Structure formats: C-alpha cells, structure tokens
Length: 425
Image 1 (spheres, helix red, strand yellow):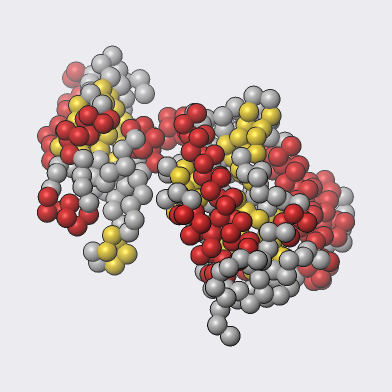
Image 2: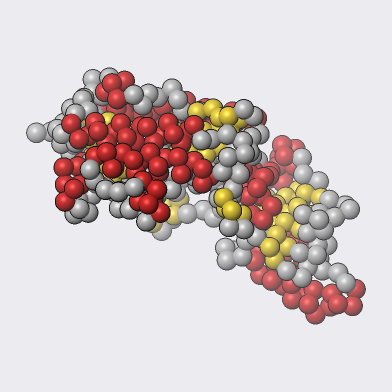
C-alpha cells in the first residue's frame, strides 16, 4: 500500500421483497483482511510509517436485534478482532475524512454508493483544493483489487483447510444427488438431495445456484431452473458446490439417468474425461493457465475429429476455433472465497504462470445443442462436463475433489437407489 489508505465496506443487506431480508453473505475482501462478517462494517487500513487498522461497526440496538439478531458493537468487536481502534459506525463522518487525508492515494471501489463514497470523493476534492500547498492528501482512487487480487490467488493453510472441507461436503452432496437420479425424477428433486446434504453435513449452503440439467438442459451452461423431469435416455449434469466458512468448492459430474453410459453418450463422456486428465496433467508450478486450457482443448478437438464431428488437422481446427460451437468456455477459473475468485488470467498479454498455493478448476465439456452441423446430429442434446478443483503444489498438483469418481463404470454405480421422493404420476 505504501502511503495509501484502503477502505473496505461490508456488503449491503439485500431484500427479496420489501422488508424480507435475504440470508446475508459478507463481502469477501472485508472478510479476507479482517474476519468481519457483520453488515454495516467499514474497515480502514492506513499505510505509511504509522500503519493503523480502524474498524467502524454498528452499535448495539436492542429493538433492531429483536428482528435481525445480536450485534457485536464496538467493544465486543474490538476484543474479538483486535484492531488498533474500533469506533461506532455513527462516528464515520467525523473520523474517516482525517484518516483519508493521511494517504497519498485511496484504495476504494467506486460505484457502490452508501455513506463512504461521498467521503472519499470529498477527500479527493479537499486534496485538490488545498493539498498542493503542503504536498499532502490523496490524489487518486485505486481499486483494492490492485493489491488484494494477487494476495488472494495464493491460498494459506487456513484457506486450504476451508476449501478441503467444502470439497468433502460437496462430494457428499453429489453422491446424494446421483442417488436421486432416475427416469421420471424431477431435476428439482435432485437439487434438493444435493443441497439438503450440504446443510446436513455442516455447510452454510450452496456456494452458487445448483445446476441440475438433464437432456438438452445439460447443454445450457448456466441452467439453474431445474424444473424438467428427467427422461430415460438423458444424461444429467450436476454442477454444485458447498460453501464452508465462505469458501466454496465447485464440482461437476455427468450421470446417465438409466444407470448406464451407452453409444454416443459414452463416446462423448470418454472424450471429456480424457480432456480432464490432460488438463490436470498440465497443472504444475511454472505452467500457465493457457497450458491447462490448451491441453484440454487439444484432447477435445482430437476427440471431435475421431467422432467425425470435425474434419481436418487438429492444429488448424484449434487455430480456427472450430470447436467453439461444442466447447465455448475456458477450462479453468480461480477458486476460493468467491466461486470465480479474483485474479488476472493474463498479464500484459501473456498467460499467467501457475504458482504453489493457487487453486483453480479444470472443467472441460462438450455440448451438442443441435443444429450445429449434420455430422453432429447423432449427438444432439448430449451435454457432458466433468470438473475438479485443483491445488498447485511444489512438485505438481493435488486434486482436492478426486474422491468423486470420473471413471464411467464407477459413475454409473452412483446413480439411483436413493430414497428421495418421486413425483406423483
């Protein structure tokens, strides 16, 4: 930060209708630096030769706490989180301007509104008007991600513990969801099996909306309606992740509704599985994000040629992006406090180098939505994605989610047999 001042603000309370509060989810950056998860919190980190952390928190309010639960208040927050100072949120207007004037720049994310933004803009205006005489005061605003994104890319021991726990619970949810799958079962029934298992196993819930897409729905990348009934010959794609301690896993598996991969569905599945193995094999320190994507893409394109869906030289087809109708997304994203954790995937036009402690997904897939080409007609409405979460280690990688099988026959053994409610005839 140098002589900068960073201001982080709690996520706003959201409402589903009028005064019905949604379940609160803390701001990731605020939590990352302070551990605070309470609404209304403002954290100010002052750099320079006299660094200081100042927290502003809501005061106790007996009437409000009857409706929304207890608040820490400044005294309890000071004892639990040990900032240099802890003030009541009501003091923000009086205290924050002086703190901001101590920095030569302000790390703050503009556009969020609330009580902080006018104070930040006021500090800039004050410095422009009077700072030239003394050479003091902030002269610009910088996104906190300029510092925090790279820090959050490399996970520490606590973060890895949370991610391992999230992965373990996620695999339990997947097994429950797979057990609920069967012809005639509602996608929503499978969703319920997954998410109730998350909660029963100690997670705060899903880290993102669970995807249960059967048949053609498996070809919709962010399908979350989960409202159709599973057909007998359908493949069922489950993309789900449990959240533990605000950290989320992210796992996808594709299951045969009838309990058996057969014909074209098996052919596509094996290609995607081989692409996942190629992607995982490319994850090691010194490799790049592009290396991981390239390994998966090459395997998928070679598979599409073998199926007769594409025709030509593999390198030329990749260069021409002939695979895009069947594989339109990237292979990886960062994973951590956010499902798509922050951090650039390229720096100055060069793909980012992987380092020990980074966690990313590998999620190759093939999707045959129909209407793309006559050669692909035999695979219409087949959608397959397989996704694991991967930690970059000193000598390679560790697949955090390897406890859930990807072998076709092992996946088949997970399907059906659950005690979940079947829809009425």
